[in-house]
Amino acid sequence: MRLIDSAPRRVNAGDAMDLDDLFSGKPADPLTELGRQELGPLSVAELEARIEALEAEIGRTRAHMDETARHKASADALFAKR
Image: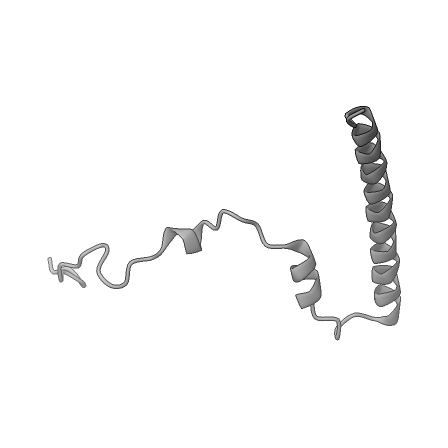
């Protein structure tokens, strides 16, 4: 019996793979990914829905930002030097 491929090969022959590239420690930025999405295939209705979702997210972000500012102001007032 003869094997089809009997040539000895090294498992790691060739360029070494950088594990940092394979297992990135930081996930992709959602805003960057959002900006890369192709809009061409979307219909007008899909684009309108996308705008509504983005506007809702802007509102949610602003509300969180306002709450964070209020919380910081309260903490600053509490720990202010007198």
